[in-house]
Length: 259
Image (cartoon, rainbow, N blue to C red):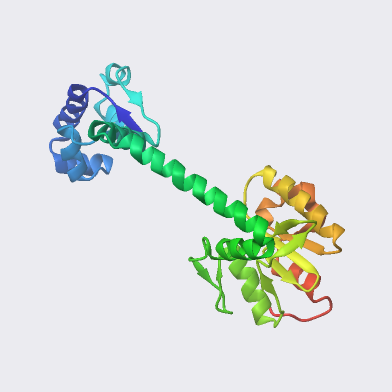
């Protein structure tokens, strides 16, 4: 976060710090602040970070309270807000804001109409298209040994394990149940595997609802979570797997699968 403080006060803080240190280079060594940043701060070209503001006040000592009273802590997105406001003001000044808003609303309505029309005319085609878009979104960071893209390292770990042990699996298959569409992380025969490393209990609640739906269709369901997160998912403890060894026994009971 950044500190908003009168320019004269920021310059004064830097001047006091520089005087005490003896030079920009010495102040850089004392506080681990790059000399280029010290130069910009001392001339008001940049706002101080909260961390560096506190470090400077501690360094200069006596007059710290005087400067703290003048400081305002800005939110993390202050730059985006400032830039957004400036952009809107510029568009109003140029007389283009209203036309752009109307055009955006028109495109949004057209897109909604397209979705609804395709749903009504060919629901299966619509779901297939949405499934394809869902599959390719966010699949650019991790590649499995089978050559497919997955969303995170946990999915890669499980996919590679199954590939190495010649376990035939589907990644993010389309599963339709009672008119609703689901995309579990993996399907192995009649077993569905969900993977998650979310640190929120609400995720366990959402997964429990999905599990109940899957079980009505006679699917066996496992949820793979890192061991250190097991407590967060205690609500679905009966479905939890925390290691590849557990996964091996779940998918290949009695086998000597490679870990």
